[in-house]
Length: 248
Image 1 (tube, rainbow, N blue to C red):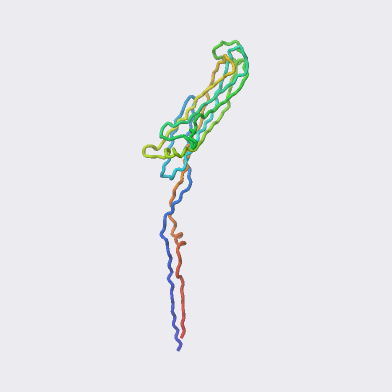
Image 2 (image 1 turned 180 degrees about the vertical axis):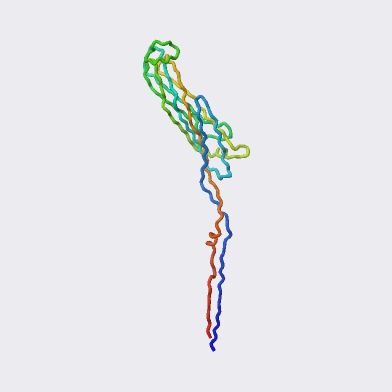
């Protein structure tokens, strides 16, 4: 009689599953604040900004940008002398950005102050004739050869810089201070030179501009991998079904 014995061996499938771990990574991010101003010189305006919230990430740099446009205004000149000739005219604004409060600094990487002596200057040269007989030592808009009017065109000036790393931490919020204020001031000046006896009258320009504070920082985010991704890291061992038949 022939007997058949069957031996079956079932391998054990083993999956090595690593424990799920939280992955942290940083990505570059930007936060921008802009405040606008508008006034007639001589004047100033205070602008308030929020300091950087360190819960957002790690501050890498601070950039301050200021710009303004000088528009309108005029300069009129009356010649009360008997002489005629060329005269040089100027109609200008001197702008300055300074810190009002909050303990921040406007010094850039080269230790120069951002927004200091930001000047918008219009100039012109004109020919003016001798007095037309109007009263001397006072301004008269005669409209004759002894009168010149200068209407300057709009002009825009800007300045920008990265805050020196030494002072960067002053822009980070703390329990004592979470805001800071800057002041932009503009002063008007005019001039007419080249002859004696010149009388002047001017109309001031309008000033419109902005200050922008930009925070560049590393934003830290956390990611927990999905279970399916951890399975891909497992090792499959001893999987299989083996059958052996032995005959006698």
